[in-house]
Each structure stands twice: as C-alpha cells, then as structure tokens.
Length: 310
Ligand code: URA
Image (tube, rainbow, N blue to C red; front, side, top):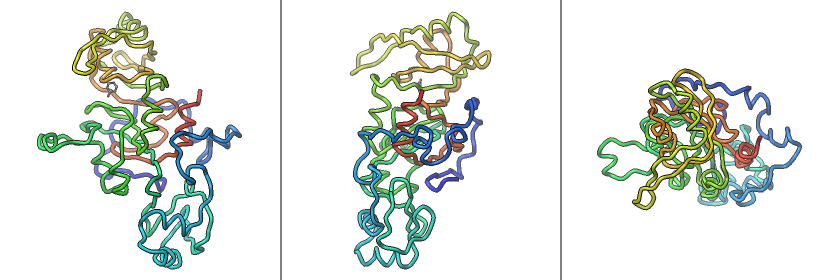
C-alpha cells in the first residue's frame, strides 16, 4: 500500500470492477516518475502547478517544515528533525539543511504526512454507492444523506479538507472513479466541455440493449436538461459502446451533463440498473486497487499524462 493511500477498513470491498484493464499501466510504465522514464520528456508545466514544490525545485528540509504551519517556531522545527521525528521518502533525516523535491518525496512527522498549506492535491477516489458529491446542509443530514467528503474527514489535514472539491459529480447510486482535488484548475481541466475528456462507464441495464438502441446511443440521443430552472432538449455527442453482455455494456462519452448516462439509456427505452465509472481519460480505477471509499493521492504530472495519453 503506498504511503499516500488511505484504504477504508469500514467499507467492505464491493463487487470487483467488472472490466480488467488491457494490461496493468503500472507494470507497463513502472512506478513513480514513469512518465519521464517512458517518454524521455519532461511533463509540460501545468496551470495548476503552483509554487516551488510544483516546479520540482529542491527545498531545504527546515524551510519546508516551517512553511507547513505545524511548528510554532524554528526551534521546534530543528528539534523535530534532530529527534528523528521527520522522515523524507520513508527514511529518517536528521540534517536540517537536507535538500529534496517535496513534490516527489513525501515528508512525515511522527508518521503523519505533511503538506504545504497552499499545495494543490489530487486524489483518485473509489466512490461507494449511497454518497452524494456535495457538501451537505443540516436538512440533508437529518434525512440520512451522506457526502463523499465524509470519507476524507480526519484522513486529510483539516485545511486540505476544507478546500476539497469533486471533479464533476457521480450520482448518489453511481460507483467508481472520481477525482477529488483542492484545485479549481484541475476541475476545469477535466470537466470543461471543450476539453473532451473521455469517461468510460460500465452500464448494467434493466433490459437487453437492442441494436437500434445502440445505434441511437452512439449517434446521439435527445435528452432533457434543466438550465437555470428551464428544461431544454439536448442532443448528445457521438459516443462509443463495447458490449460485454446481454444487458451490460461499456459506454464512452466525452461530455458530462447531469445524469447523462441514465438519461441517455432511458431515452432509448431502457433503464440503468447499476452504473460504475471505470476510467477518466487514461486513468483507470483498476490500476489503483482501491476498496470502495478508499483514495490515493496522485501528482499533477500523473494526471497530465493520463489526460494526454493516446
Ligand atoms: N451519468 C449519470 O447518469 N450518472 C452518473 O453518476 C455519471 C454519469
């Protein structure tokens, strides 16, 4: 289990994801730093990369620790280092001037991961059923609603927790891959319609998918959308379908209107029984081996590679 991964003990592992990737991306591309290793190219700078950390510039350990806000004085920082309470990339470091890239090497204080307060974080999350992609008010809590953010509370810094956003939304009943981030730019990069980011869903329909329905789904169907309280017709963009069973198919769409897949399937006279997101661009949930409710931190370099791979 990577150190930056939080795996839920309390949510039992759900149905294994029905689709296996065509070969493990990790095996194909190696572990950390794989993008540069495979392509021989440095990843492009990203709009959501901020500060020295994101540019891959080395920082001194005492400077990094002072900026985290966890220590009240420089003396406390030095004592924590000299006492052997700080690890960098899993090894105790007692040299206050030790230089490292905090973007690629995790720092822990007494076993707890430290972040710079302004660092943007990106998590891959395995959404369980029964959770909403929203912050909830008291009324919603009173009727027993739960938020995906509940599964981050106490497991990430409170300053990070307060800034978390979901990258798009999955319906309450939908399961699967969801990015959660502190960065509005990451949200925009993935959800803006002009970026045409492909999302793949495993759809289990109530009834068999007819050939006619398949043609309509892939060519574009008309669904109703509510915009500013008004309902209007919308024709979906071309999509692709891979049949995996009588009632099961994988639908790939490059847009993300509200409840789009459910509306598309009902527009062709069928209904969704279960919906599971398998992947977003090159990021497949299977490669992370996450239980439902678990998440793992990933880097903007990894994200950019997933968004730009063929
Ligand atoms: N389409 C839907 O209908 N629901 C989701 O959760 C995601 C895509």
